[in-house]
Image (tube, rainbow, N blue to C red; front, side):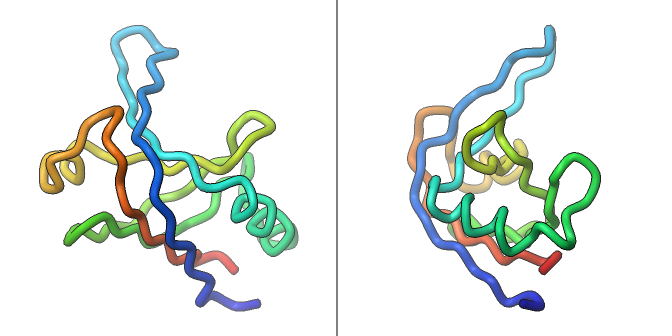
Length: 103
């Protein structure tokens, strides 16, 4: 399949603070969508499994990558500019639309 795969979902934003001094905010993709993405992307996956996406939350759209969680769902980093524009923080639920660009 070449591009055109879109995943729409709602999920809470969560904070990953495993590195001292760095705080990252993510949203986890649904398990079923993550499994399907793993199957579809097997031939094209880069590096450690990241996949390029076009993400949208509210009126904000940006390009980034999703990353495989450790044995769980893919995760999407939500940068500060997006959170500020959409008035979101860790714990808030976001409606997300992702277009996979690597398939």
